[in-house]
Image (cartoon, rainbow, N blue to C red; front, side, top):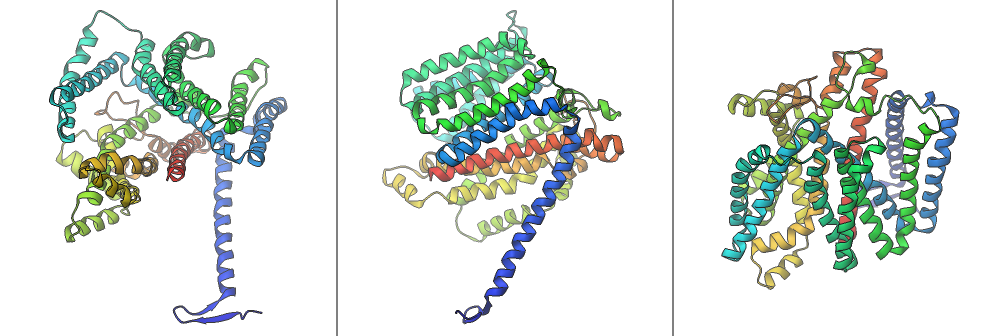
Length: 532
């Protein structure tokens, strides 16, 4: 029998019993935290969804059309087709994430950015891309910096002219037609490229692209019969139907062993559609949930039963647009410089230490910094969407830099040396070898950082962001955000009515958004790990 205690020179006296006790204490504390968090989420979910208000017949319908089929097919795939589990998650995750994107785009084009204005900017982007192509044909191979300057200057010039010409044009396009041209056709081109590349069959890819464009066009006429207006229907078809259909087509055609995963996804989606559309037709009364379409599309109200989250949702979407545009290029650029170009000296070490320290600074400090820099120094509008977005960008910028550095650092040096051996320059190696391999990890870190930013409240309070405000008309106007709205309901409108209705529903919406973003990050990370 082995002795209970052993003397190890480097560690001193080691006890197996102590290690075992420590391990089980860690397990117990972890389980306690999970159970406590689960109980809290369950309590909030019950308050928001009100599941016990549904009729027994509705629960029977729910079990027969959604719960039992989904659990049964999931168990079948888990036990018999382990390689199809990822396909099942992708088949569920793609339409779920597309639904969020469709809602965000529909809100923006309905209340913030007019479709004809968007058409003008889209044409400016297309013409800027055409200018770059013409520049390459005339000048040949040029530097990356020169191409960026040409593209940026041409876009600024076209953006200053084209939107005004579109607004003054006598030729009027319906909003849904603008969405079809600017969103569906590029998505159809992406479907053609994806299908053709996955199947190594360009002809099939072109056919798939044509079918995708036709589906987006038909959505404008079929959508109103499904309780959607034409423009949101085209957006929904573009972001949900087309990517899901392309994913399923490639899986069926190229990976037949993973088709059982699509069965799980189809069962899940059909069950949700059945609950949404078939149950009301059959007269089955479901839960009297506070998280419904009216809550998501209604403005704030001092009465809890009439309060909605719509202006705060639009404000959060616009905040995240500013955060992504301002933090992603700067963070990735800084990471590329520090890992690939910066010399190994004291200044670089000092910068690296400061970035690591800034990642742990409390968010309140960034609120004070944002007020001092953007409001007092730059004289921007206090509490505007632009100021709020740039303040949150300062908050997550160190995290984006550190996560991007880790992703770049994980690229094998042998790939760099192979590029150099083939005659590639340092920038060509970074652009064509390092960044493509590091980009999934960079995206993962960025999405997780944005998930943190979307739930922050303290920095927005310090820069004068409104607790309750109508939907912003632009990036320079004042607006609210989901965490600010929840803070207002928990403080200014504190009471039993708000705690058990609007506030609980808002917390559920916020959690769903955060979990969706984290899920996307996990999918990207797993895909990156499989490829490497």
